[in-house]
Amino acid sequence: MPNILFAARSEKWEDYEHLLRAALEAEGLDCTLATDLAPDTVDYIVYAPNASVQDFTPFTRLKAVLNLWAGVEQVVGNPTLKVPLARMVDEEGLTQGMVEWVTGHVLRHHLGMDAHIVNPDRTWDTTPPPLSKDRPVTILGFGALGQACAAQLAALGFPVTGWSRTPKDLDGVLTSHGDDGLDAALSSAQILVLLLPDTPATTDLLNADRLARLPQGAVILNPGRGPLIDDDALLAALDAGRIAHATLDVFRTEPLPRDHPFWAHPHVTVTPHIASTTRPDSAARVIARNIARAESGAPLLHVVDRSAGY
Image (tube, rainbow, N blue to C red; front, side, top):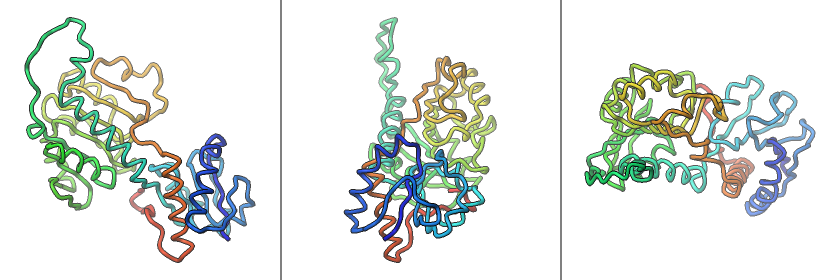
């Protein structure tokens, strides 16, 4: 009978307790689930990186840590964590939420909807937008989230390029990889979507030099991680008219400080980190399924590669 510690902020326990118990029971697991287990009795930790547990050394019989979040940058480098760390990959909740946010904002910018929603001068411009086939979209980051978004956009007729550090394929989508592939992927991107993880290799990936490689008037969507973009370089590109608009869901500091220039910039849309959030009902099922796999001797799903950082 495994012992499972729920390590997250107290308000999350209220959201998750009954859902996790139901999901664990549905998997046929007879287990103890609590927030206050003695460390040396714990087999699994259901974990949010902002929890009070930061030292894993006392958890001497720990088998795995199951992250509640898709992002693991706040825990992956913890030197006291010696057991497998599984990130949250939830197609029903996280993935679908990201697909809907990305698709909605791609269509918003593609159709020029802002000019119709806010039109104080009551202008009557009958110029139609291009069709989707004439609006290339590039997605940087081609993991589960990137591929799901690419498939949806390709189904709508957009020419989609997916870029990753290592080769990946998806039917109906042009793919590229590595530094050379990045240059080509940027040069065609009328709409650029950032879905990379936050690692030392991706910090400030979109700097002044790479922003200059985008087509004139490109639009940037960042629902990935705040540090992917050099904020000052982005503001300069927006002020110069090189970049037409940036819709940003993630930031280096969250909540975004009220005096940050993004709030007041006429060509920036701020959304409050809502593109892809963990839904407790579906996340509980993902966690229970992974624990059941481990207890049956099967390998855990979605184990983080510590060397890559995700």
